[in-house]
Amino acid sequence: MTNELEKNLQFLCAEKPSVAQVCREIGINHQQFSKYLNGKSRPSAHNLRRISKYFGLSDATLLGPHDALLNVYHRQTQSFAERRSDPLATAFPGNLAALRPHLGAYQVHFTSTAAPGSIVVNAMFLDESPGMVRSRLIEALAGAPGRPRRWTRCDGKVGYQNGRIFVLDNETTDTGSLTMSILVPPHRQNRQYLFGKMLFLASVPLRAPTSSDVVWKRVESYRTVRDVISSCGIFPRNSRRIDPVVQAHLSSPNPSGD
Image (tube, rainbow, N blue to C red):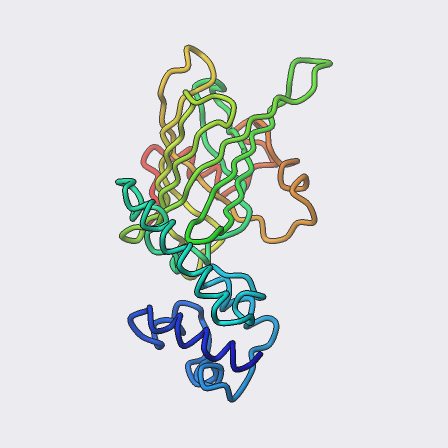
């Protein structure tokens, strides 16, 4: 099995500009990775997961027979070639390695003409699939008295270009609803927030296009998706449930995430 891993890694790395770049993008020690390439060492389960995820493969495929890996690789290559006909194929995901640190769950805060004087909070999840980062936004707003919450889900793609994160999504049950966001990655000392702008169709009134400053706040730890969604809703700007950093940014006449 180690021999197969060695051959598989050598083949995959030959398709990249350099082994050094592979190590940088995975975030793994070059000297240790070289031992995997030469068959002198076998990665731990943790490192194996990181390597297979980087190449868009399963652990079993990376460890399995070389012929099986070639079949999977060529199918993926063909699929990518087909996606090249899409004019946005290179924009999403763009720099995939730069996007990986931003995977996870967020609270998305913005203002809307549908709720003057308030801050809307949605839940956002960024997950990697082979060669792509996908977004899943959940909006859970309180219904009328005695009525259940109103749920909306939007699915989309995420790209990283020129130091900015781009998110494009639409409502799964309404093709007329589209949201576009541009976010600024955080500074090293402030990794909890992403600041930016979003353009979207307000549900009411008149489904008019509108824009808002937006703040994504990372949810560092949670047990279930429902824990993140429980933070959704519409809150007064001065609500104690809204982070002071978010309040200050969305209340500023000239907000800036830089």
